[in-house]
Amino acid sequence: MVFMDRHEAGRQLGAHLQYLRGQDIVVLGLPRGGVPVAAEVAEALDAPLDVCLVRKLGVPFQPELGMGAIGEDGVRVINDAVVRDARVTPQELAQVEEHEREVLERRARRYRGERAPVGIAGRTVVVVDDGVATGSTARAACRIARARGAARIVLAVPVAPRGWTERLGGEADDLVCLDTPLDFYAIGQFYVDFSQLDDEEVAACLRRAAGRAHESADYAGRLEREVEVAAGVARLRGTLTVPEDADGVVVFAHGSGSSRHSPRNQFVAAGLNRAGLGTLLFDLLTEDEERDRANVFDTGLLAARLADTTGWLRGQPEAEGLAIGYFGASTGAAAALWAAAESETHIAAVVSRGGRPDLAGPRLAAVTAPTLLIVGGADLTVIDLNRQAQARLRCENRLALVPGATHLFEEPGALEAVTDLARDWFTDHMAPAHV
Image (tube, rainbow, N blue to C red):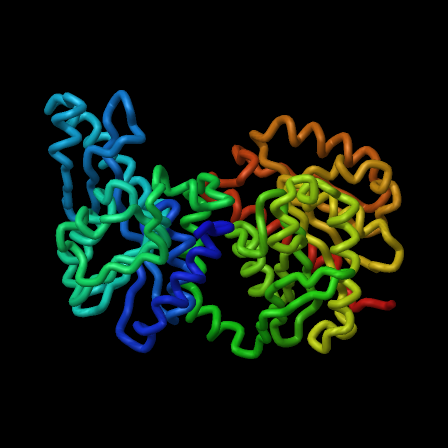
C-alpha cells in the first residue's frame, strides 16, 4: 500500500477507526509527520486534536538511528541494545538528551502557544504517527498518555513493519495499522509525497483544531461544503466556505507539491473567513495528474484550470453577484496572474504569497486586477524575481516584505502577517462583480 501523502493516509486511517466514533476521544499526533495524519483522523472521528511531544534520541554519529526517545512529563525510553551496539557513552547520551529536551520545550511553546494541553484523564486516547520504524517514539508517546491518566490508549499508524506489535511491549491497549509489508525499509517508501514538515505546518494544524468549535460559533451563518469542480475534462475536489453576507470569494491557487490541504493556505483562508470573505480551496490537478511533475509546473494548464474554476464558481448560488479574487502561493501565483489576465475571469484582486509571478511572463502586462506581492524579507532570490515581475505589471500593485521571513513564512508571526496583508488587500479591493 502506497499513500499519496500524509493527508490521504490520515483519511484512510480515520475511516478504519470509525468504530471509536462517539466515544470520549482525544487524538494525539506525533510531530512532525504524525500531526497531519492525526488531523484527518480527528476530523473523521469528530474528536479534539492535540500534539504528543516526543523527541527521538539519535546516535551521535548516525542521528537517523534512534537509540531512544524522550517526551513531556519527564518520560524517557532508551533502547539499550542500540546504545550498546553503537557504543554510545553515558556522556554522549546525556548530551543528546539535553539538546533534545531543549528542542522539545521550545516546540511545546511554538506548537501550542498559550494553549494548555487537551485534557486526556479518563478518556480514550488515539496516538497517531505517519508510521512506525523502531517503535521508540511510539512507546514514549503511549507512556506520556498513560502518565496523564488516559483510560485507554489506541496506537494507530498507516504503515509499520511485520512484527511491529512485539516492539511496543504492551504500551498500548489497541494497535491499529493499515499495512504491514514484508519489504519495509523506511516509512517514506510508502508515501509518494513524504516531504519534511516544518514547525509552522504543525502549529497551523493545531490552531485550526483548537479553533474549530470557536470558529463554528463565530460564523454560525456560514456555509461550508465539499465540492467537485468541473474544469474541462477534469473533476477537481475542493472546499467552498462562504460566511453570511460575504463581500467576495477568494480562490486559492496552491504551489508545486501542495494541495487544498496546505496548512499555510488553510491558515490564511481561516483569517479571510473571519473577515467576512468566502474561500475556495481546491486541487488544481487530479491525483493521477500530480504524479507527472511536468503538470505541476505547467503554468498554462494550471491557469486554464483556475479560469474554468472561476466560471464554475460564478454559477454557484453562494457566489452569485460576489466579487472573486485569487490568492496564489509559490508557482500558483503565476497561474493566478495568468488567469487574471484573461478578460472573461473578471478578477477583483490578486495576492501572491512567496510567489513566482515572473513565470507568468508576457501575461503580466495584461493583468488589470490590483495585485499585492508578499515576499519574505529574507527570501532574497524571490524578492528579486518579484521585483522583476512587478516592473512588468501595469495594474495597481504593491510589493510587501515580511521582515525576517524566509520562503515558507515559518518564523513566529510571519504567516499571521501574510494573513493580515491579504485580508486588508482583498477587503479594500473587493466589490460586487459586474459580469
